[in-house]
Amino acid sequence: MIYTPEMTLGEARERYFDIAGFGADGGYDEFWIKVKVWRLPIWLPNTKGRVAAVKLHDLHHVLTEYPTTWAGEAEISAWEVGSGGLHGYIAGWWLDLMNVAQGLVVNPRGVYRGFMRGRSTRNLFDGTFSEDMLTRLVGEYRHKLRLDKSGHGPTIRDHAAFALWVAASVGIYLASVVLPIGLLILLILWSLGYAI
Image (cartoon, rainbow, N blue to C red):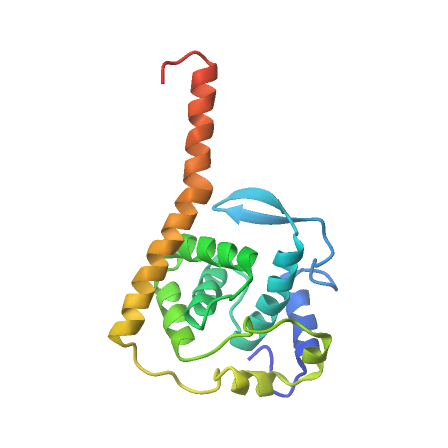
């Protein structure tokens, strides 16, 4: 384990920031964030809603031990969706569903495992981040979210939920990436005089 149960969430998050190379504050105060769609970097505004969601998301990385690699982000995103979703965190929903869709290509087994693990656990998105959380122990929060218990075998309901969320993630991905790129290509072709 990288983040032992005896560590405070604050200590564990500092270690997580260091390992991931996020800087001392995790980049929460940055104006822009870089997200990669495959190998293509896209800069997005670091909105207040995104920061609120990512503060909890970062604690999830600590509690679940999923890494910040492409494969790890796919797994943790699937886990967050499977463990109850992101409630009112719209930016978090969008990023998680984008990661699940990409994960279907780069880490399909991890997406499935993460989602199914989530079905027998909880996440922090039913609340908001507070500095007080950082004084609590990693083990305490793992217990609170049922991450210290072995999950049940997947049920038909779990598989149906997985299929629904996979379909939603692919739809969000297509609407967010493929459709705008397609329209841009058509616009360029039209501006070059091609009949459309």
